Length: 267
Image (tube, rainbow, N blue to C red):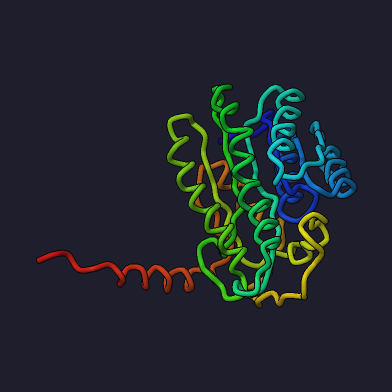
């Protein structure tokens, strides 16, 4: 998508962090916005910032783990703007701790937001994007934790690995429809994801015993740096959006182990 001006975008997890940075970068490119988040006050603030850049902005408080809420978000976006060209399934939370100590509610929460949130976005928006026949682009926020497993991040790894596989397949499925797909896999970014418990639904239990978050390798970068990479990926149709050169060594080690695990060809 070379020229984004006049297009419309939907961003989940838009009230802060990477989502907010993407909203502002898209607004600067003349993209109309539907912004979604579970934090209404922060969402309104982000919508005000984006609107001040001269585009129309529709804030819609949304829990991405709720399929009905995501369908309502799609209805609101299409009704208000008439079309959706860019979908950023960005909302996410983090749960730390060893897998053998994880509570069932931890699994429910993380899968609900990190994986079902992306699935719900695909279900609610993609058929209508295909039907409108105008092409488009989808950005699914995963993590380097969707490519490399880390001790103490098993639940998070599970959800993000799934988002990577979903995105790789979706890119193939949508190729003939002119809809590109990118999967964002950052390492350390200065967001509030490590404070995810602030938005944990009461129905999934209060915060359990404090779980240590593993130290991440490499630099901590700003959401704006990540968003710049995403904008490039949308404009040039890049599938993988990687943000840290430090991740290459870890990927190469994993790829090497897989490579050497293949059996030799039969003689």
